[in-house]
Length: 423
Image (cartoon, rainbow, N blue to C red):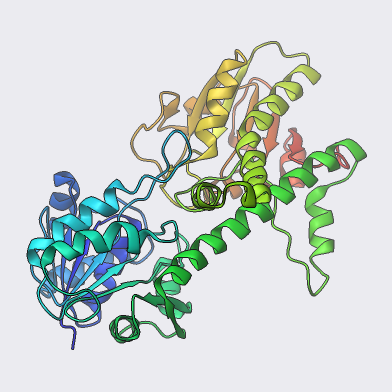
């Protein structure tokens, strides 16, 4: 029976998984190569923002169930949860997975279970992890067991979804899958489905690619709506009343470590067989430039030359402090290329992660010619527009998160991405 777990990688998924196991009776040791991350965790200081995480971390440390360092230690089970970014040429960078696997080799004992949680291209366990684990001298599948169990959670609801969502477990053999299922059963209430490792790898990438392609469809629809006098948000809501239709909504681009990255894994391994996936990625990657150009067009329409843009939102999604692959950063870069002055504000990003960022809303909006909403934080939804001082009262909402009537009653011209009906 698994009693001790070593989790390698203490980011959004690794840290939340680690404290979840430690709050459900497992003795957990967390590992991260960043000394400051380790130091802060041991001091109960969080480097990520997630509801409930602080309380669960405090409890785990206070009860002696969780420790962290920069090196692994022996355990019954090892969980690898490290980043899998893409290279500039859009190929998968699996260096973190390889190095994390290398790091645990000296600590693996006979009978141990090794699980990869990171989202990866299919065949990663077979081609990257197993060759490293063979250096232990143990027979894979008999002496040590290996599986892939990808997370299926969304920032802001990680703990809720870790417990309630169904989970896919792919083992290199039946026993590897079964042992992994038994480990996660300590807290997972959703159904745990068993398959082989490559199927599990593909399933997770498929899920994120489906969402990316759906958003690309919505973004194309928003451009069409702009040309025919339609509010695409209204049209999508009506279309989704059909019992077999579920169209996502448009936006200024797609961000985060998953949806903006994982489809490239399929493009890389699929080649000419991944044409729709590839085209969808290009559509979504084109939205920041489109958003910047629309912003310039609105300024031109109001006879404003140049001008200052107050960007509201740097995080890739609402109510998180995560800027990985955030389209906001790309939008800002395009705005500056168009000769516009930009000041950005995000209440969830506490350190200035972009040269345009200020920690004060008043500084961002002061003398602004247009407010550009790129992230649907709750704080933005509840802003009182009467309290915002700008040079021109114009707002461009790319997330449909503001109350149109409230802002119009406050004297603002309200523009919505994909809405030519109410313009």
